[in-house]
Image 1 (cartoon, rainbow, N blue to C red):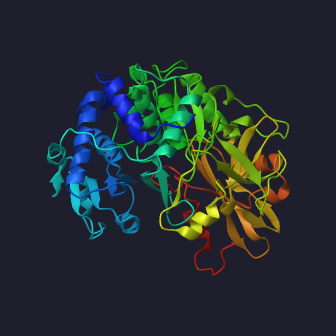
Image 2 (cartoon, rainbow, N blue to C red):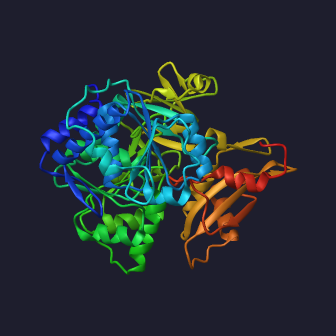
Image 3 (cartoon, rainbow, N blue to C red):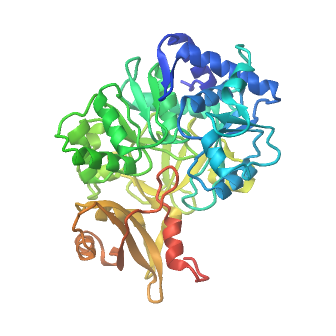
Amino acid sequence: MSPTPLARLYTQAYAEFADRPAIRDSRRELTYRELGSRARRIAQAFRALGAERGTRAVLLGPNSCEWAEAYHGLVLGGGVRVGLLPRLHPAELAQIAADAEPAFVLVDGAWLAEHGTAWIPPLVKEIIVLGEGAEGIPFEEFVASGTDEELPPPAAEDDAWLLYTSGSTGLPKGVRVPHRTVGALVRNAREVLPPLGLGDAALHTAPISHFSGGIADVVTASGGLNIYAPKFDAAEAADAAAGGEVTVLPLVPTMITMLLEELARRGEPSGRVGNVRILPYAGSAIQPDRAAKARAYFGEAMQQLYGASEAQLPIATLRPEDHVETLNERGLPRLASAGRVTAHVEVEIVDADRRPVPRGTTGEIRTRGAHVSAGYWRKPEATAETFADGWVHTGDVGCLDEHGYLFILDRRKDMIITGGFNVYPREIENVVSELPGIREVAVVGAPDERWGEAITAFVSAEPGNAVSADGVLAHCRARLGGYKVPKRVVFVEDLPKTGTGKIQKQILREKLWTGLRRRV
C-alpha cells in the first residue's frame, strides 16, 4: 500500500477528528477544526504574498502552537519547510539560509530581538514574527490576512521539508524530503509503534523541526493531542510524565538520562510513572543501565527508531521487549542494535564496491523504499554518490545478525586507523557504556607518531560517581582486543552536541589535531 502524502493526511485529520484537541502550548489549545481553518488561512496568506508550490520558508523558534500552525499552512499550500534550530549560531544560520534561499522567514520575536537579522538573506520577501518582541508582520495579522479556502493539494513528489543535516560530520547539506516520504514515515511508524488514538497525548520537548516533529505527524494522523514545550527541562518533563495526561514522550538518549536522574533525585520509587506508554527515542542506542532504569519507571515503553535525514525513520526499530541484555551468537548485546528492519523497507550491507555481503559481515548500510528522500538540495555530485540506483548509502557501518537485528557499528567517516588496524569507535563506546556511572562516551583518534592514531575516549560520568580512567581501561581490556583498548581516557563534564543532541566528534578531533596538517 502506497503511503498517503502528508497534505492529505492533514486534511483527513481535520475532518475526522474535528472537535478533538489537536495542539496545545502554555498559551492556548486548538481543535482539529480550528487548526485546519488557521492552516488554510496561512496557506492563502502565503499565496497572496507570491508563494508558489516549492517556495521555501524558514521556521525558526522554540516548539509552540504558532510553529505547528505555520508548518501545517506550508504543507497545505505546497510550501517547503526549512526548520532551523534556535541554538545554532547566527553565522551557522546565515550559511544555511544562504544555501536554502527562502522567500519567507517565520521567526520567534524574542529570539530575533536578541540576535538580529544579519543572518537573513537579502532576497527574503517578508519576515513573519511568531510571538512578540521584534519588527515584522505579526503572526496573528498574517493569519487573519488569509481566507479559509482550500488550495489544490501538492503532489506526492513535491518537497515538504528541506531538512539540513546535523553537521555532526561536517557542513550541513539540505535534504529534499517529499510529501510521500513524510507519508511513509507516518505509515511505517504507525505500524511499529503501539496503537495510537484519540486518548493519546504527546509531549514534545525535543525540537519539532527534527525527530519529535515526525512523531507529531504520527500523532496527528491518529487523532491525538500534541503538546509543545519550548525546551527540554528535566523537572518539567518529570512533572508532566507523572501528571497522567501524557502517554507519548519522544526524547533523545541524552534527555532520557537527564529525566532518569531527575526521577532518582526526587526519590521516585520504581513503578510506572504516570501513564507514559510510548517512549520513542532516536539518535543512538541506549546504555544498558539506562534501559534498566527506564524499564523500572516506565515499564515496556521504550522503543528506538533508526533513521537518517536521507532515509526517514523507522528504517529499523528496537521494540520494548528487546530492551533487555540479551546476547546474540556473536556476543553482541541486542540492546546495542537498532532493532529489526521494518516493513516496507529494504536494507542491505555492502562492501567498499557496493556489493552485498553475507549476513553477519560488516559493511556499509544502504536502504531503499518510499521512506527515501529525493536527494540533496543543489548538490548533484553528492546526490549521485549517496542516492544510487534507488538506494541510499547511509554512511553508517553495520551488520545484520542471524536474527535480523541491525547493528550500527559506526559512521564510516568516524573509523580510526591505529597501527594499520581499522577500529570502529562505536564498538568501544558500547563497551565503556556498560560500566556503572558512565553518562556518555565518545571515542576518536588522536595523532600519534607510533600508531598513526591513538584511540582516545572522552567520558562524561554521572555526578558523584567514582569511575576512573584505570577502571575504564581495565574493563576495555577484559572485553576488547588489545589494539582496540583506548590509549587515553579524558573526563569531561559534558560532550559537545548539535542542536538535536548528536555528539559532535569533529569538535573533539579538532582539539586533538589543531595545528597539524594531516587528518587521518
